[in-house]
Length: 343
Image 1 (spheres, rainbow, N blue to C red):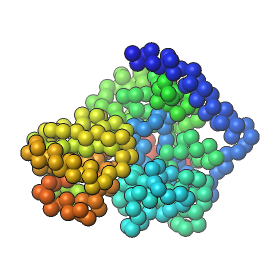
Image 2: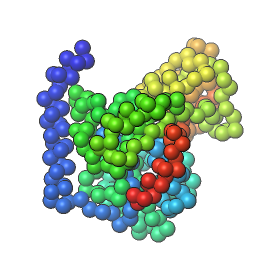
Image 3: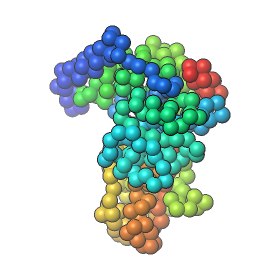
Image 4: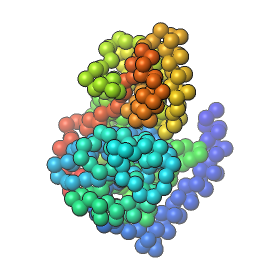
């Protein structure tokens, strides 16, 4: 059935991909791409969601912390504001977006800002943070007005772009050969036990796009209480899982060692309110479950709602989980050096 649907959508995908290609060619041929006032590294993808950009941004920021003074720039997808905003302790998730706020809360001493105009955002960072000498962009591979210093493209191991097609028949934002515009490709979300033979086969498929190919597993953290990070959810405990990410089913699959009695699987960037949380509580009472596990990206959206509505007094504990990036085959140092050499 899926194949027949894809065939029917193929003409629309050709049109969509052709428009994206013509737009890229227009910027390149007429020299419309500009370098920012500061060197920038774009961490992006060709696929719509699910490649793990935000965890990679935080991983790269920590990896390069001893070499560069960095800031993170994001569009701030889903926010109810526009223009340039610097995130601080008084910012609301709705003002800046869930992913930038997650980055802000988990990257110590790294400025995080949002601006849909990346060139303007970089210029403001240069003016407002004199110590910054590198800007990491959470997404931006398709933001053509900016010509970044380097591009890191993510390729999901479970859904590689070279086997996919442009929207709406597939999930690509543009034709796969646009990957030739990148400097480094990281195959994300690999199994931690990935064999070198399989990795080499994948690498052979990707080397026509970039000579620098690395592999990374995204390992699930232990569920930690959202108000007390010294308290973890014990193995074997029953819990309700809540996800508002691109691939909630993958999160559930990785949450091993816990009894997930119910999974509330929402669309990516879901904006939660008190009624959503009360629905989870109601399900807990029906199933005799006392724990709710949410992704860290979703946790930042419910902290205040829980407190303001007294939900934290109902005897249900909330825990957050996140993915931790590990570069496979002992190549973290090589990965780091490749990034430094590009910048």
